Image 1 (cartoon, helix red, strand yellow):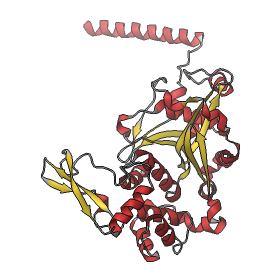
Image 2 (tube, rainbow, N blue to C red):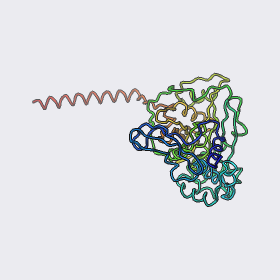
Image 3 (cartoon, rainbow, N blue to C red):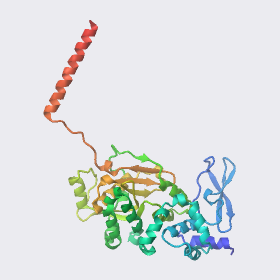
Image 4 (cartoon, rainbow, N blue to C red):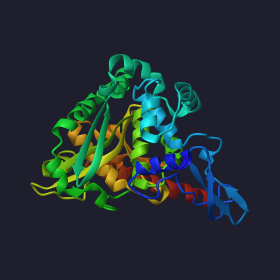
Length: 389
């Protein structure tokens, strides 16, 4: 067995699906024609799928692999390990143990320079490493909630975000909540509760504007998801990369819930329009893919592989309502978004559940308005009569 085959087997052994590898191409990047697989290209450390476009007669390989000696998975893991406060000297051994590939600190330094635009946490890393030990910077916990969810909370990044901008200081209750998730999450509730993701098209979208935007999350997704073909692993790797390497993601796979008391408060105290009912003892649960703090708002985000075809407004709104109740923070300060490697869509959850009502004028003001309207009509009639003469 040569080195390329050994590395390929090592990569595959890290995944539970047989189809692990680079993300499959579905369209020709030149003419958008359909593609067929046409063999593989054997590189020094990996095999790359070759595609053929029948429309423009081109042979195509995934663009991200061109000119790269090392598999993209190795590059991504090295970048993430560094921003998780591992030293340049320690990372090569971790990569060797995981993939059987030898790299050097100098190679990692070159990758850090090449992909710097995708690594804004680099400017925060020095401050984080001075205050936190590597094992304390990120809180991690595996939660068996029907399936395994890997909750992660970047304690170091959150503290720096709250401290560096006064607009964010009001979100301290969010940090307090995330600190308690690991120890106080009521896991038993998540075993048999209703799931927020099950609800679709229940809220009125009158007055709700869904805004497509350009966002850094799309660029990061475009970079990361090309290294993985399996959707479940793709989800996990993207969350890990964003948490470790961007400057705004503070938590991933965050468990949230609503109960009957929450629903009564939202409906009757806040006058929110919520077409859902929970009886005493019933719960609605979910897991937020990504929570960010940026531009003075909390962002509740969900990765959807086909974002342009999705409309998870109900799911994200329920997440926002639950997070608002769990933290005591106003829904006004929250935004929701979903994205993939091509598109990003954003909306205000408050606009989904709270509709502005036109105020009815007092009776005397209504009478005055009607009187003025009658006088204006009479004046217009006199003007018209004079013009005819």
